[in-house]
Length: 82
Image 1 (cartoon, rainbow, N blue to C red):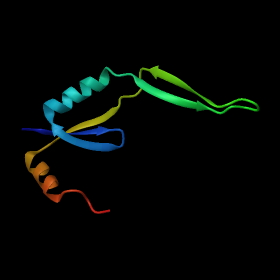
Image 2: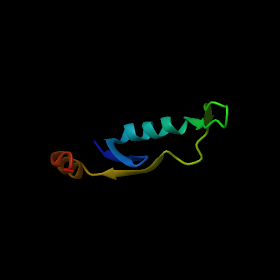
Image 3: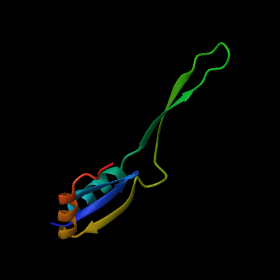
Image 4: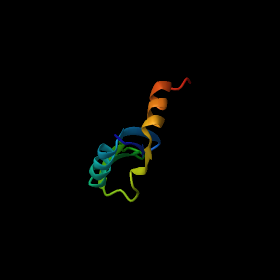
């Protein structure tokens, strides 16, 4: 089966093509959630505010197809040395 490499944030993940398309579709319907710490001033404590909003940029920056042979070679190589 055809494999796809999905770039999500700053990392790449490999999965079957149908899974990659489903993953992209799921992420497309999500909202971004973020908490922000606001420092307190004199005589005030710091506090958090919470925000939910639609992401302006796509979370998935790239989906590319790889051949079965390319995947097998990468799988055989395993995790790279640091």
